[in-house]
Image 1 (cartoon, one colour):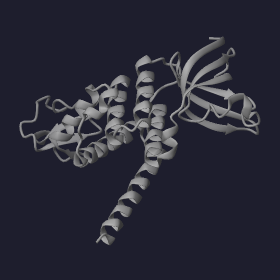
Image 2 (cartoon, rainbow, N blue to C red):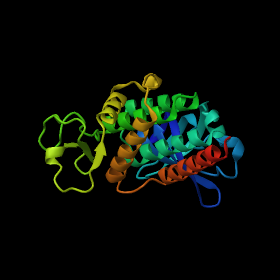
Image 3 (cartoon, rainbow, N blue to C red):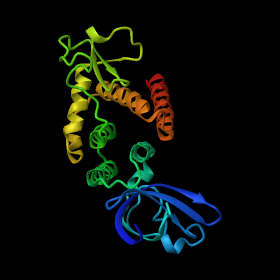
Length: 266
């Protein structure tokens, strides 16, 4: 594929390359995930006007040379920004996590219109003040579903039966689904999971992300879902995302501050 192409895109990642260039990873409407090089981007701010930063929603003009892996980025016109994220460290951190998650889970050059639409809607919701934990859980579950990694949550992955004892269910990241008590065996990596958390995850996968705020998820369910999805995604990716490590530190710091505040409250 050679020639000039125009497409909508969200910037996932942007890094300096050499003395004056930048290599940028996009998720595009027309081509899925692609990487391009912006020649002289560091020295010519007028040309791209900071439009190649993560979270930028742009109209992208790229050129593909024969037998070249990287596109040449010729123009990037802003279509929308999610500026409110820049003033909320928690929303920015969760947004960065979801960009990195999508980047890690999608191959280059495979167009997926629904994934692009999910990403744009998610960023709009996050920017406009949607409940962070709920909208992130919906994003995770819908992304897994669209990419073929959706875990089995309706029946035991071993015996295929719906667990009779709903209070004794476990989640297996290795088996990609729930396991009943009878099939538990001696596997130590299983995570106990409540029926309520399973119901929330199932609902999240079925809910349009624009309606994420209609899901009322209590703190205990949010925490349980976050632990399950964290373990499952870590298993699927074979590593912990850098943005997830930062999120863990941020949440731990917030919890310490809240604990100190309660201690000193009258």
